[in-house]
Image (cartoon, rainbow over all chains, first blue to last red; front, side, top):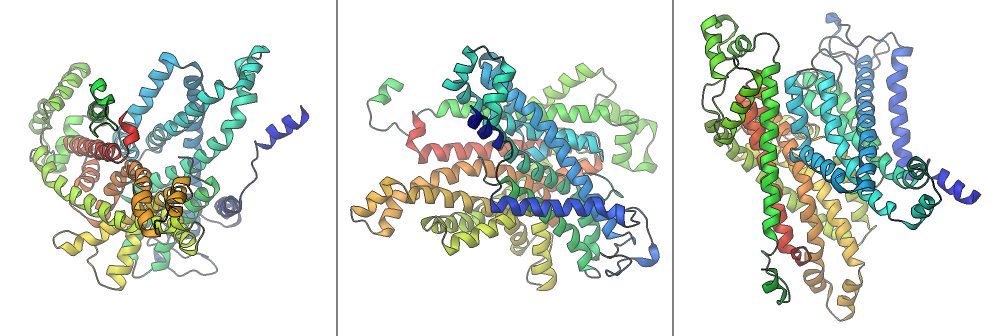
Length: 274
Length: 326
């Protein structure tokens, strides 16, 4: 019995492959950058200094300044905080209902399964970004509209994967045995379902965070997402684009940060479960 | 019908197609309803007096007066109670009456026809280009899993997947138009204008389809039937053509359906970046200008395009894979 328990607890923290390790290190470095910069430097992402626009990196401004003389260091740190915070929030609010509804649908079956299944299909009828865009159109520049839209798109994947897996697990002999011993649904979930579901849910979470970050940047880039002067990666790219000739390094920075952020999450996710 | 078909060895490829098409038809209806409802909520939730705001968007802020606002109010039925107006709104949609653009004053339908051609052209070019780039590379890599080509293409695909289409497009513009001056950066007219936007979308699509093709081919090349085709004396080329290609094609085509999500999302962003006069560009502009009929029209067409493309994928899978016809 003890070995079994050990086995089950080990699944909570799966051993990372080298790929995932690299992803975790990259992500940790970026997050450390984002949260340490405001702490170590006197950095305000909104402070404009018109006498010092598009400056090269220097000791005072380690990453240079943008077209309004704002510190790129401060803006990048704020943008990473915003992107990652948003991703975390929308992944959490997509994963929790997604997993709960998926387990319910897979376990109970019947009409509940059909109703939830068609609800998920309805959310999938439109391409994700289009749905987010329409919601953002209702409340332009609003962080919460963006958040609701992205979560609404993301929950479906958890629901579908968890439902399919639960259907198989519920029919398994070990769960049947525990049920006959009189364990309640919650105990069955913790003992039999969650250890099997957790790795897949975590993989989906990492992919979901990456797509949330990309969606927000894409909307910022076509100027229908968050509004200036918010420091947001897509918005920074499109703002710095006209100054490409004078300051190519300034424009390269948000692209590079977005790339590393998404790459680290993709690496951390490991293999695509689909 | 199923009785008649059961006597044959393999059912005709049209068997079981009706249910599939019915499902997609239902999805198309769902798209129309969702777009209609969301845009209706949009008109009702514009802050301030909607009639004045829309009139200001249409005629310019200095030209707004009460009569212009009243004209807008009757046109969009803003003076009626919400529920009745909602059904009126949906009824117009069912009749394909999409109204007139608030910015240009042209019927939305006419504008959509014009833009749809451009978007479909771009999408077709992108898909074609991605099919030339991705699956062949994946198939070759999959024949020798973990060979050098497999490793290189995996790294390339990971890098491309972490770059959103607009960043790829931006980099392509900077390389090919700004630095090298080979291709125009943006706009529309000559054939050369289409190269960069199509390539941007194609690279994103190929990054995924090459990996799907690689995995499918690796599965096939390690299967018993493939080993048997080699032991019975077929050379590498023949066993690939007769036993490899069609089996590996099924997942690649099936995955195209998932990829069309990327395509539609990409079209929206890439058209805006390259100023390509298509549906995605129009949608983004309509949102910025708060041109509600155009938002509804463009979102509807993009949603329906998504359903149509998925239907094509369904048909292709059905034709390729006899196991689905039961």
